[in-house]
Every structure is written in structure tokens, then in C-alpha cells.
Amino acid sequence: LAFDLGDPLHMQFVLAAARLRAHLFGLAPPSPDAWGESEVRALLATPDAAVPPFTPAMDASIETDNKEEDERRKAKAAAEAIPDEQKIAAATAELAAARGSLPAGFKVVANEFEKDDDTNFHMDFISAFGNLRARNYAIDEIDKFQAKLKAGRIIPAIATATAMATGFVLLELYKEVAGKPLDRRRNLFANLALPGPLLSLSEPMACAKIKSGQRWDPDMYMDVDEVAYPEGHSLWDQIPVPGAASMTLEALRSWFTTHHQLVLTELTLMHGSKSVSVFSSSRSIGDADANLATPLPQLIASKTGADTSKMAFYELSGAIFQTVEGDDATVATIVLQFD
Image (tube, rainbow, N blue to C red):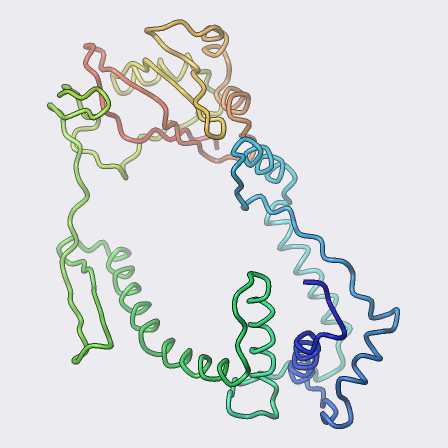
């Protein structure tokens, strides 16, 4: 939205936001009669109050239909990103410097929300902010009275359904921290609109275990015999590979054979939405020999475009194994540990 001094909604937002900010810092704003739209328009029309043009941020988290472009943009953003420790140190230093410039006894003032007081500009701000946001997405706007009705239902909702759901989630989190068994956990269905209200508890199902034996393969459209490794693992189980940062692909194959009696027969890596073949023991891949001699971080970076220098681990999802006896194996998730 382009800022427009002639738009009443824009003026409503500026006036209400300025008064809320003044209250926050303990400043007494002038009365609406003494300081209204005409005064604000005159102030905003000065060069010192010029509104800079809006420039959208190139957020690496925004995805488009072009998956390859998304991956390149995310990789570039990750490479240019400032470490969190530096951001925290810079923000702390900036706050400390700002604190030194504050007058003695300065403190911010809490602004308790009250929708029914038309002199506090709370609903003016909420109404203007909500309608401007609706205008961003071509959603029908509502008047201040309708906004007040909706705002009046938010606090009861937070104090009932949201608070109840949060409480039950935290109860289950306590059970997780305390190591309680599965039969002590609970699922909950609640409907506060029904008489009672309705609260229905049930025991959660255990995660499915993957076991050795015959299973139906929908891709091959036939039953196949496979060995589960480790026996009875689930989709949540992992096989960590320590020291993977110093391993080549050949060293990784040897590590699996030595420590788990597994043979890595196929490896593919994902570059955006494309699957890139890296190694196969049953078919020819042009650069397979070079890939075997390449350190894993370098190999993954070259094939996927990812910046492995900032990775603590990498999930190797495209690996296919056999046992040393030659049986096909269904293996838990492989996680390469780079630090």
C-alpha cells in the first residue's frame, strides 16, 4: 500500500499509533481537538516526515513455483546470514547504548487493552490496522463497531480454548521430560460449545515398528523380503555417523560395513526437486569413482548446492542398503554428524 495523506484510513492509523506510542513512553498527547488530522497532515507533508518507498525483503523462506531458484536463493541467504551470536551481541550493545541516553527515572508504561473506552484509541488502531491488512489481500473491510465486536471475543477465546489447549500440551510435555511410558500419555478432544463441556481422552497409538519379513511394495507391485535394521526401528529412529566431516564416500561405505554389516549400494542426493545419482553398485554413473574419493561435505555441497560449512548434521535420505549377506535392507534414517 502506498501511503496517502488523503486516505482517512491511513490517517486513522497514524493518529492512533502515535497516541499509543506516546502512552508507552509516558508522554501526554494533546487532545484530539487541539491535534487532529489537519495538524498531522501538515506535519507529514514536511520533508523530514517523507515516507520512503516500500521495498519488499528477499526472504529466503518464501517459496515460489521455481524450486531451483528457491534453492539458490536459500543457499545464498544462508551464506550471507549473520550468525545468531553476532546478532545478539550487536542488539545487546545497541540496547546498552540507548539505555545510557535515557533520562533519569525513565520507564515504559503498560497499555492495558480496553475496547469500550473510545478515548484511548485502542479500537481506532485495531480497526485501522486490521483494515489496512485486509486491503493488502483484497479482503472486505469492516467498520470500527464490527471490529469492536470481534475484539470482544478474542479475550474470552484466549482465556478458554487457547489456555486449555496450552495447558494440556504442557502436561504432556512434563510427561515427556519425566520419561513417562506411552500408556501414561493422552490424546484430547475438547468441544467447549457442547454441554458439559465435552472432554474426551484417549491413549495414543504407539509408533509403527518396522520389522524384518515380507511386505507389499506398491512401486514394484509385489511382495518383497527385507531385513529391518535395526530390528523393530521406527520412522523416528536414527543411525548417527560421527566424524562424517572427515569421511569420503568410500570411507562412509567402509564404516557401514565395519560397524553395521551393511553395504551401501545406491546413493542419490536432492538438488531442489531433482534427484542426483551419486553412486550405484549395479549401474554405471559417470563420476562415481570421483564421488567415492570426495569428502562428504564437499560432495553434498557440489551435488545439492547446500552450504555444508554451516551444517552440524545432514540427513542422508537417498541411501539404499543391503546386508553383507546380500539381502535388501530397510534402514533407519542416516544422519551425518559434521561437528
